[in-house]
Length: 517
View (cartoon, one colour):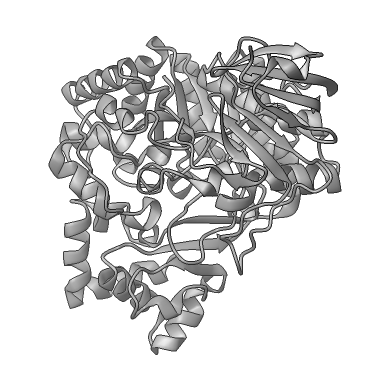
């Protein structure tokens, strides 16, 4: 006897094959049969006539590390058909960390990942991942973050690691892999990751490769420029043989730094030489991050308490403001998304140029004062991409989807709420950039293969039943920059490990997710 039959759906299996009509039978957490199945063989039957049945989507770039623990229903993702979030991105997460370093990262990352009222009782990767097992709506896979390796080994300091410290990082990396992580992440524009040199990264990636993990990269654009920063990662991939994945692959900077054509040519050249390279992107032309990313390098050393102390000293703040002003940032394209206090909430949705005018201050001074008052928990988005690059990148066969979804703040980037239906509705159905079968390959199956999740990512007998059932004619993202927190339409059912989490477009409350090693 089956637990559930999905009748008369159009199966798009995730491998890029043409869709075909069939029934799907579920037993426990797995797909038991595909074909023609009698309805009497199951306790429940879902009529999927006119609907697509495909694997659950895997988000390759998220910032839901702790917010999913604060809101286990995780509607922001599951209503999009996402059944697995990859967490620990940008080298900025929370395990393995000692209690003091964990408290520091709670503060430092509040404007990116949030600082919710949860237990925060873990220190190791194993303890952190245990908090997800059948306690949240979707699955997670975890990357050991570079910040943890550096903080636990040498603190929040601006210097290169010694040979002994690099060996300690390797030991922590290996332990994290043994405890269930799928790889390593870094962001070489953020701190303390930015303090590392190529030798340190090679050593870490040697350990990742030994454990058959994947290395995931936010490249060093600010120091090297777009093209040279990609070449740095490709050199490390060649030296170590590590599986390599680029996060939020986009230009998103003045095109004088490089073009998407040049970026993709580098990937193709490396793959032709035998390197295992992939990348993800989101279907929007706006990026988002912490406002503190504009602070000069020397200001970050020592972590959040040291930053706030520097911002509180008049002479030091003037020096910081002068260096920020020298960056020549287009402040009219930088929009505030997360400003927690009631006093400063009037600035949310305004450009920093507009907000500074409202406050009667020069822009750099305003930014410094705002970060000090909000204890660094300020987020922003920047409209710095272009549609031509976005489409060129998503058409590449090594592409997969990642929302880079930030879910804190009153007006976050809509990509957190709309990425996956937008790929299908706008870029497949409306614009024809990719066929439905091909875009589905980019959303669950390529990510599952990249992360070594061999028991999911396809509609296939014997695999885990992470599934999405949607209407190909009506699926659409509704989130906008003006009203970002809107769920999509056209997604009728979502199953996670065989449990129905979205039923006729409504969240059931089922918490059947787990940490995937």
